[in-house]
Image (cartoon, rainbow, N blue to C red; front, side, top):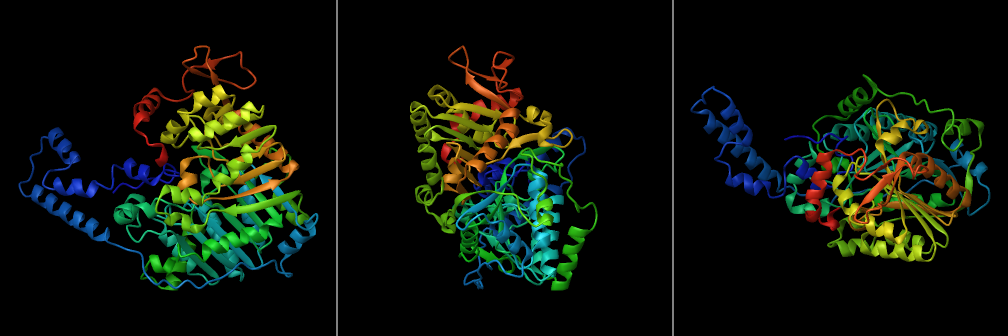
Length: 578
């Protein structure tokens, strides 16, 4: 069975992952009815070759396929273990003996406020996580949708191991979709003292590939289509990093081909207690399974540790981070603040919130939507008085969203939306859903900007390596230049009714200015502006600031085949699945 490379599958919907390798839930039925026929590849090989078939070879091939089918059918009957013991645990508060906790306390402006350091550049965001983990004294709580088995993922996992060996309690909660083929990495970390790893909404079997996971759990597809999309990293109960980034090369400008333009924030102060309670809510939920209850290994503890050490320590591994001297906001690396003994932060009042873990068990999209944080964010957007800036890599407003944005525009609220162009997106089918609403959005007065992979590559301030192209991944909003949202949620149906999400809203004019500036530098300076063409039936794309210059009348930088395929598929793509 063909595996989907992580770089291609970074955010694909489960149903698209299945179709991308030509395996669908109906595959087993179709395969059973065709069992006595040779495969397509066999037929092509037979027609192209003059070598005669060996009389018994077809019988052997049929027998092999029958065995494979039986194996798939048997594994499809797998279920999750019942009566799983989950030792409850809660977050550790800031300890007086923790230098990081003391640093956070010394930096607090006044009680009730939360301090922020925006992290728009990948090296700064990765450096913050690594440096905090290296200085951890009491605890590390990490919650992620994806930790890849690449240089960045192994660097992160090695740093967690090293902290645990110093006596730091490490709790790692990982969504179980992209653990495919990497069980040894996660069980290896769990084999060390002071570490516990739990899998959220796990698959029972077929764990070597994502299609294999779904094939082995066909009867449970509805549950497994819901995933935990949260990203949260808390150290010593005193400092947290949260936002849009997963743990993989692409999120920290480490990929040679494609990198995400993303955004995180470091937070200290009043919001930490709520972020810790959100982590505990997920950690102690019935949807979180200790990894040993799902992944069974015959290796002893010492063998698992040695295998983990080999994986993360040997070969071409990432050991250091060399960020630019200053980021796009003029900040230096967080290491400088940590060593100086005081954090440079902006301060405001903040609320952290997340979907309940039980959202993944919702019986219908309506039930899941009722639990969604998206409605709260949209209510804040709709309450804007002067202006709104939205960054959403996957933006599907729906008819209701178009109406609400049009009402804002009618109240003379300026609305700017930054999303991916067709050429930049890693989800062409999602772009179909977005493209349906472009004309209506533009006619209502919404300003649309679409990230250009070519322009992002030329934007030296983003620091993309070599020939790497840029893709938008930042999920943020700024309302009235005072209120900010940063988190994991996109403005699309999947965030609303399928995945769980986590976010933070802050009343902080200084942070609002920084987010707006970061989106302008990393987004609008690397984007095309879309507008209604002189021919009312069409659209055109122009470079912001050069509206009278060169314009495009088709999706810029996209190939003819991609445009044709999306146009062909457009009538058949159901929006609720995007």
